[in-house]
Image (tube, rainbow, N blue to C red; front, side, top):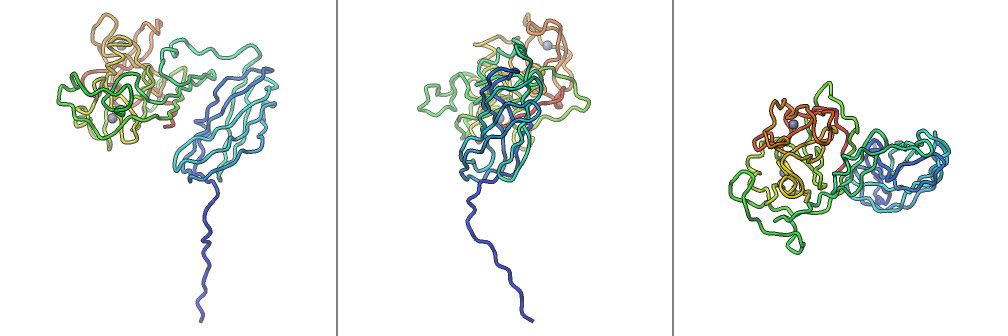
Length: 339
Ligand SMILES: [Zn+2]
Ligand SMILES: [Zn+2]
């Protein structure tokens, strides 16, 4: 009996493919109003890119609210995670939701743009303008989309020596130990956080993930109280630089503890420091007047009026001892982050 054989396709793969398209984390660079000429860039994160180049797409017409088109800009996929960029233009015919059905590299999903009534539109609450280090902040009425590059606006031993912001370590480490520089160097990141403008307590409090859990006013990400693998920060604390941050393996600079530059140079120990992904604000290690926060719950927050929220709000506080920022997970329902 003769054995059958099959032929393997050995032709090289020259087609751009991805393994996932995250339309839910997509964002538009501008808000739209009915009847007004619109021009913006839509950014859609992907995973599993195969490094191949791709051309521009044909125009994708909006449905729901008509009158807009999206065109994929030509580019080259990164190997792994990246963003697709679409040029969106036209004049939305009415208020409502304009939806674009996207198909790329074997994946499909839809991105939606809120179109506001003529002359209307959401007004971003002023408190978000305190995030001075963001590369952009946009608002669709529900979600505040904050983009940042994670480059600190202060000196660091972790900037490359050729960078004007490089400065050798001096001063006192966060834990009072001997500074122990890690091998990483600060590099530009592309981080998008979508946080709810109306934060709400979660029925089930999700654990904070490793990586970005929030953003500081200077556009530097906030990380939780764990080192890689969920182990305590103990061994890492001595690698925090003169302003108490450090970069991880991909060069993403971040704070696990009080951002000393914000609490001593740009603001005060009792000022707003940033936001976590659940939309609740983060304050420094002191209350107004210099007292220590009292009655922090297991998530490391509590509720009272602040200068930014005179009607009162739940907020987290930095502290000099663990968990430093956030305790047993998010108090509220977290938004999304791509990093
Ligand atoms: Zn770290
Ligand atoms: Zn407080």
